[in-house]
Length: 567
Figure 1: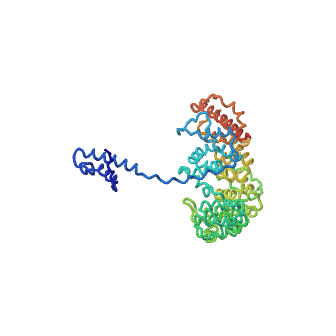
Figure 2: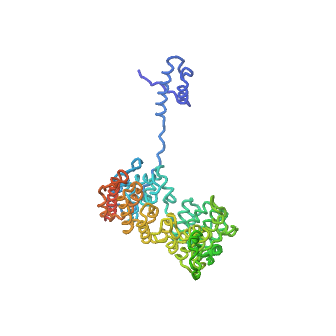
Figure 3: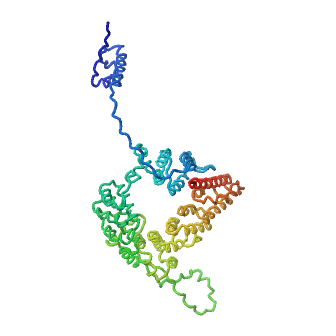
């Protein structure tokens, strides 16, 4: 007798959804198909669900295989030396502990050394080990300041990986065009195509790259589509003209002064004022000269009345002494209105809250005027002599602050030196720049050696409490005199029993910026010092721990450099 299998019913459309609905409502309210109400209904529901589950799984059609991804591109750069590759793995594996403040211990902070390691590796043109790419991208994902160096070091394979993982999509946004190579400067057709059809990030990258190689070609490319661009895009494109800014850019920037966007007009005016020979600079010079002049009518300040009254009335009358020569003083007459011509040239008419309108307009005029104006206007004096002149009616702060901004904008080292004054001058009593923010910007216009020498002199006079911002503009590694000034100031603070945690920021900078060759002369500072009676409790132990960490970090940086230099 032959046995035949029972036929399997064809699946009912929506059968699974119906079973789910029955389970949600309950078999008391809705019975499953093929069963009546009663105690057997739940069992029938489970049997039906089991049967439908098998049916669904057996009837699932396999999906079409996904297209195989293209192979990762080749990286032609030489691989890292083995020791440097091991060091990279250690740096990437280090993670900062929970932020609890207080003491950090004596171990180096490896993640803070990663930017320096990446800069050195990029300078030498090494390629990373392929297995390190995920950790590199994870590190850059968590720290935006690392992204440019990481993406340069990681190379084209990192972008290939980023297209396969949503967590690393930032790499495609950070790299113009997702890593697409920019056209060669001579490939006019490709340049025009990318400029006309590319994404905004691709167009910005193209303009910036072209500007660095062929400034005129970049300007002409922008001028061709200028009137069709959105205001926010025009602003970004215009900002790219800072690189290679020169007199040939003036006609285009003069046209941008009539732009319908206030921000575009302001940026164009700023760029023109950075060209001392531009027509806008000349117009600003005329306006600023009308506000500032030498006043020879000022007389030396009279002696106080009380002091005069103390003179003996019976003393014989002395011969009249010759009148002292009148001291030259700078007189300021701020503008009384902001006319349309001033607004067209970038002067913002509405003053910020808390600022007087006249002083606001005056500062903008002086800031935009060529600094060469003032020697001619103020009797042929040098910048140092001009800055040393007294200014009448409490205008000195406003005038000197505007000169500081002008020196930074025009990158004028002579005026920067005059406004900085000697580093031994009082912290808030310099000849021109009285704030640390102004001084740090002015220092940026000087060469690296001169900058370091000035900051070293400042630290030798004033210590480290106000020097953190100034140290941030010094080249790394610090020069010998600057490094010694920092170490000496830290040693003085330690011996004085100063509150140690207030110097943690400078200690962190020293770990990253002090020349590793200085490690040897720090060994004498590793012992726990005797604490003065007025010292902070536990300060000696903290100082010893901090100097131990500094020495260990410096020696680690030296080892990193040797590993990257190995052939």
